[in-house]
Every structure is written in structure tokens, then in C-alpha cells.
Length: 223
Image (cartoon, rainbow, N blue to C red; front, side, top):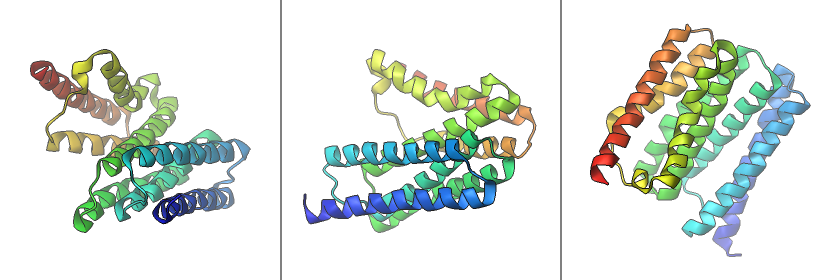
């Protein structure tokens, strides 16, 4: 193992330690129980394995500054998962998820300003976003109904469809509207946890369907 790969492992270890510290803090504040701890630690272990594998395949021996921000955000997502599994009230879920959403606007800027934009970093950022939406949609589904799960599952369904329909794996142009719609999903779901009316989630889901539909139509014509 090279010195730089040791540095990456050390960065990942710091991320895992941050997860444990956050879980301990949530235990003190929200009474996090054994189920929440199991979910949080399981998430941290899965994150370590997947990130380590992806970094080795990409030939990345050290995480960039933006990746470190995403790693911190991932620990917050693990905290949201732990709270949801524990059945915590809305306040801690809203607080932790809101911090994670705010950091989502930070890692991309850090990557551009430091010249460390990478395919691995973009994928890491996207997967953390996807997990957060899935966890939040599961919780909101218990409040509004199972239809909310479509928000968290849509990207995974799209990826699964791409394994069958090769043309869905084509390259997409950068669309500002797609970024806005993606950002809206997390904000609306957090608002729903806080008690926002269900129609706001319905509108958010409709926008997401429209956004994915735009991508499908583009790839269909470009196949």
C-alpha cells in the first residue's frame, strides 16, 4: 500500500469516526437506541467498502478536499438513517438532514475552486444524494403514504432500467433544470418531515417525473 493510499484510508477512518461521534451525539440528544446504532454503523461499513472499491478502480489514492466534504455529508446521511430507523421525532431528523442539504451546495464549489473535479467525486456526491432522498422518502411515506417512495426509488429504477435498455446509459447534456429539480426533492422532503402539506410532495414528485422524462426522451432520440 502506497503512502497516498494510506492517506485515503486515514481519511475514510476519519469519516467512520465522525459517524460514531454523530451517533453518540444523537444518542445523547434524541435517545438513539440499538436499532439506530446498527443502522448507522452498517451504513458506515457499507460506505467504507463501496468508496474503497470505487477509489481503487478509479486509481485514486487520496480523497480531494471536495470528497472530504462529501464524506462528512455522508456521515450526516448515516445519522438521518439512524434517526429514521429509531423512529425519532421530526426535529432531529430535520436538523441533521438540513445540514446535509446545505453541505450539498459546498462540495461542488470546493471541487471547482481547488481544481479537483473528478468522475469519482461526482459519482460519490450523486450516490450520497440518492441515499438521503431514499431515507427521507421512506420516512415521509409513513406520514403521507407509500407513493412518496417513488421519489427515493426513481433514480434506482432508472439505473436498473439502464442495465436492460443500453440506450438509457448514454451521455446526457448538463441541464440546469435537472439540478434544480434534484435539489428541490430534498428540501421538500425535509419540509414534509417538519409538517408541510402533502401536495407539496406531490408537486415535487411530478417535477421529478418530468425531469427523468426529459432525460429518457433525449436518450431515446440519441440512441
